[in-house]
Length: 307
Figure 1 (cartoon, helix red, strand yellow):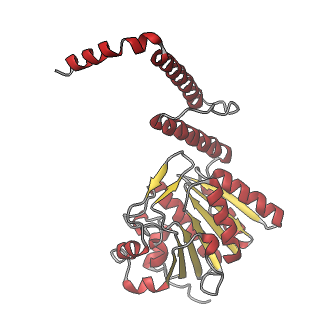
Figure 2 (cartoon, rainbow, N blue to C red):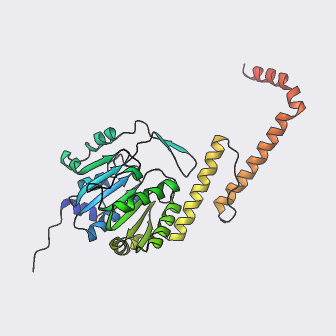
Figure 3 (cartoon, one colour):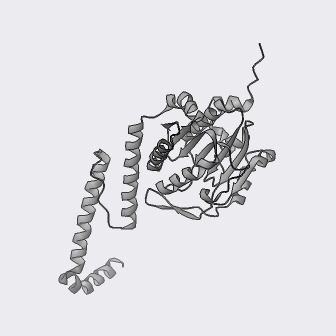
């Protein structure tokens, strides 16, 4: 009987889900990191070595576990490096000084210089990355770019030609792009590709395709969140964030979907209705003859209060 290979120090850290494998620049929660490490272990379960791709690397914090992993032989980082980008929550998010050079400088503080040799970067949208021996055959891809459903789905479509036969597509902030994930499932059904989807704590999702589906079933499903509950909470979070963003901007508020009974949504609907009524009343006052006629008096009162 042969002697099993010795467990490396890295594998020991991966097995115990050591979240310090991520650098401090990673914009992920502790639960996110544990889930992403489970995904990394899952791909290692059916690939002795693997190739990793990532969309939306920013400062590279989520690249670090793969840069340190001796089983990871190549990494493709794709990020068009926007200075601002939209989000399903109704806000645009700014990324000051967003550059690959800044990411590489940050990575040098976290990984040996030799590890960076396996990193290939593209300052492009994923759909513009050319298929080549350097970019294709990816066994694991993390989609963490623009957090809108159209962009996330476009990233999935763009990555399909670059995937190995049998792979896992992971999503950070899966709750924000849950419709993109569901559209990806429908596309895979249409293509006749076997797949398995899992939604995990905190905000991580994964779709295993072909051999990757078996790995997701074995290694990730035991740690899955309830799918319907995850989707319900995701929609509640998005709708609440959209309303709060609209209130903050002073925008006219569109009616919230009436088909989702939820205490938080009911409270938001009531708040929206009150704000709309108060706004209408205020505009009525401002338009009235009395309001215009008393403008000089209001200016005097305001000046006196400022003394």
